[in-house]
Length: 348
Image (cartoon, rainbow, N blue to C red; front, side, top):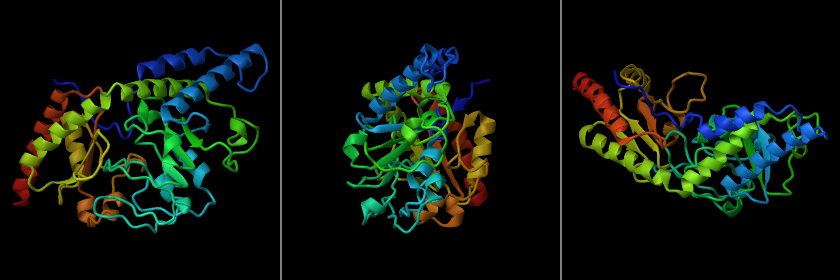
């Protein structure tokens, strides 16, 4: 039996060995980072070392990094009560706080008339489409671009952004808000003065240690051109599918995309069905964002791009990582094409 192949990196990436090792080391640290004794100072040093690694990976030296429980909490911290506008392609963690009044064109690009009042993602988790971020943007969801695209927060001209550790091979349950130093921000979780008074509560030093190690490793991968190789494998799969699947639409094919993401729409063939068929064949893929409590529904992202409800419910996302090999995606191609031909025959 062939081993299973994991092709859902945009949902979560496998834990990096560097992150696992850093977390084990952090488990041995007794102190509270807010304590002034030697044990506390050791815990504080771990937190600050990880903060420096995350800042360096984000190109955010000199900015403030606030550790949170994940990108969803960081989004709430950045967006709550601000009355910002955005587009319907945003992640649900952002959509919960914005007025979805901005238009999206057929290539997935958002028109931004007032950057200072706008939240705009760097890259979309479902389609992989990358945005041109305007200077002076209020908030950006950097989660999917972090570790995959070369960017520096300090050069983006964005007031605040946020990221999540588990998208880059860190642990789940830890993320960060990055903000220009001096930005005014009211804490949502109040109590002690942790995280520069922006987020109360004893720091999750095990998660933070894993995040810092993953960020350092992710930055090294990006500098070494690892994601260029991932992009080549994605393109091999896309070309192979395009040659055989005449009923399938390749979302964002003509747009700038994340190097690892392929979004396929085959109208009438439910994404939920495809996910189950591929799961039985030994491949983990998704039908869109994983952050919907396990529910598979029509993609609001694709509906915003102009797809009708049936087509938006007929999408799958295949997303790779550095560990995925050419032979893995060719096996996936064979398995998917087999089911596609059965669907096409029924639909004829």
